[in-house]
Length: 280
Image 1 (cartoon, rainbow, N blue to C red):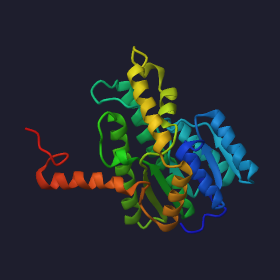
Image 2 (tube, rainbow, N blue to C red; image 1 turned 90 degrees about the vertical axis):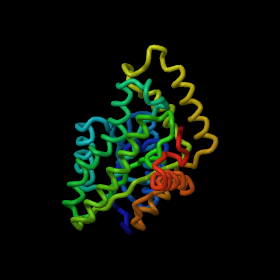
Image 3 (cartoon, one colour; image 1 turned 120 degrees about the vertical axis):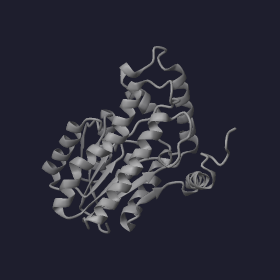
Image 4 (cartoon, rainbow, N blue to C red; image 1 turned 45 degrees about the horizontal axis):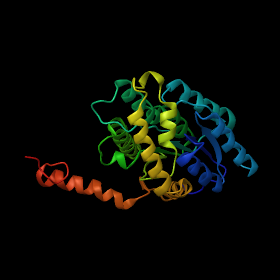
């Protein structure tokens, strides 16, 4: 999509981190904004920032793991703006936990937010875009959607699912010559609060009896790494905007990290191993 001025962008998880970075980039391109986020204070602050800059922006509390709430977000967008041109299925959570000890309730929560959130977003917004004859749908995956490191079981599974979802969607849309396009964002380390927010919003029934001490320590370590070495989310927003303008499907914040996925694929083809080193 070339000209976004005066058009409407919906961003889930849009009040902080990558979502806010995308919202700022879209606002700079002259777009109107719909900010969906569970954090009421952050959403209010984001809207105040945009209103002060003269940007048309509205917000709604939305749990993307709820199909009904995503559908309500679509209705609210149409009631206020009469259309939607860019959808960023960005809201996500992640708890660092090895695969086997991870509670099933945590598996369901992470997959419901990280994978079903984008599924519900496509279901609610794609018909609107196709009816109006234009639109673009993006979903935030991760480098964890291209290769699976240890200690992030459900997150890896969900983010691989997002890559498959968006690649399939893009091919389906192109196959039927739809005016709607699609892309997937696979960020590397970004300076966001995802670890802190994930711990804060983790459903109470999913927490282990020990109150997640080890999980909390791991999350704090990841959070510290992101804050010290992560890319500025506003830069991510500019990268996403450019990709939408130029029609790129793959949006990578750290292209060099994709070499890990290339190496994994080469090992698969060469000897069937996961990393290029066979065990025993």
